[in-house]
Amino acid sequence: MIGLVSELVQYAPYALIALIVVLVLLKWPFAGLLAMIALIPGEELTTFFAGRTSIWILGIAVLGAWALRASLAEERIQIAKRPTLMALLWLMWGLLSVFWAQDQAAALGRAVTLAQLITLFCLIQVMITDNQRLRMLLTAYFVVSVFFALLAIGTYMPADLKRAILTEAQNPNALGRGLGIGLLMTPYLLRQLRSVRWRIAAWLGACALGLAILLTGSRGAWVGLVAAVGLTWLLSRGKLLKLRSALVASIVIIIGIAGLYRVGVIDEWMVQRVLTLPSVEATRGGSGRTDIWAVGWEMVKSNPLIGVGLQNFPTRFEDYIDVASLRGAYGVYPGRDPHSIFLSVQAELGIIGLVVFLMFLWAIFWNLSPHRGDSRAILGILLLTFMVFSGIPATILYRKFFWFVLGLATAIPIVITREET
Image (cartoon, rainbow, N blue to C red; front, top):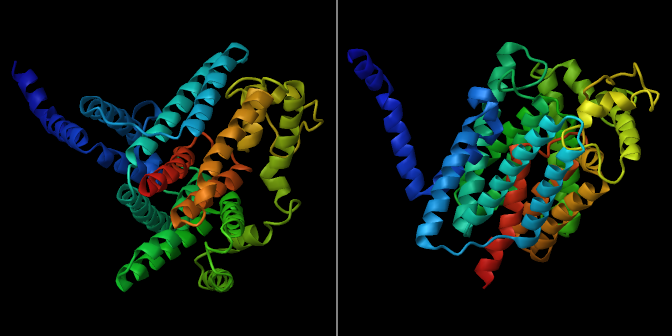
C-alpha cells in the first residue's frame, strides 16, 4: 500500500501537467496548434517511444480538443474543398496501392503517416480563422526557427561538425528546408513591424537563419530558396522584392560568405560545396541522384499506370539496377530513396497518383493566384514554390514542414476571402 502511494505521488506532477495542458487546449485549441508548429524545425529533439515526437502527441490532443469545441459550439467549418478533396484522393489511392505493393506493411504504414499529415493540413485550415491568427502563426514559426538556427550554429562551432544539425538523428537537408521556411517569412513580417527595434531584431534573426542554412550544407535548400524567390518575383510582378534590393542582398551574401571563410567560420569543404553547385560532374551527379533517378525511371517504365505501391520504391529499387546498367555506380545500392517528390509519387503510385498530386498542388496555387496583390498571398506562393523546388532533389512530401506550408498556403486565401466578404 505504501509503495502504491509513493508511486502515485511520484507521477502526480506529470498528471497535474497533463491536466493543465488538457484544460488549456479545451479553452484554446489554437495554442496547441502554435506549439505543434513551433516544434517542427527541431522535431528530432523531442523523440519519444517508437520514434514518436511531441508533435504527434500534441496533434492528437489538439484534434480532440478542437473537435469537441466545434461540436458543442456548432461552429461553421470553412475549408478549401478542391485541395482537400485532392489530398483525400491521394490518400485513398495510396491505400489501394497496398493491394499490389510487394511490401504491404511499408505501404500501409506510409498511408497511415499520410493520413496524419492530411489531418494536420486540415487542422491548419480550420483553425486559422482570421488575419490575427495567421500573423501569430507566422511570428511563432519565425521566432522558433531563429532560436533553432542559433542552436544549430552554437552546436556546429565547438563540435567541429561538417554540417550543422541539432541532433545526430536529424538530417541536415531537412533542417535547411525547415529553417528556409522561416527565412522566407522575413519580408512579410518586416512589413508588419512598425517599431525600428523589432525590425532590426527581425533582420538579425534573418541573418542567423541565413548562416544556419548555409552551414547545413543543403544544396537543395539553397537552390530552392533562390528558385522560389525568382519565380515568385516574376509571378508577383516585382512586388515581392525590388530589383535593387535583390542585387544588394546578393552582394551582401557573397561578401558575407567570403568574410565567414576568412575568419574560419566556414571551411574549404563548405566553400567548395557552394562553388561546385552548378557542376553535375563535380557533385558526382548530385551525390548520386542522377543515377538513382535513372534506376527509378526504369521502375516507372515498368509500372507506368499504378506504380509499385506506396513506400515500395526502396523495396523494388534493386530489381531495376541491372536494367539501368548501373550496378556499382556511385550512390546506387539496394534500398535507395527516390530523392524526389515527383519521382516518388510517379514510381509508387503511377501516372494516376502523379496526376492527383499535381492537381493537388495546382489547386492550392490556383486559390492563391487571384490574390497576388496581397502580401499574404505572395508569401503563400513563395513558400509553396520553395517546397516544390526544394522537393525536386529530396523526398520531403512526408515531412511535417511540407504539410505545414501546404496548409498555410491553403488557409491564406480563406482568410483573405473572409475579410472581403
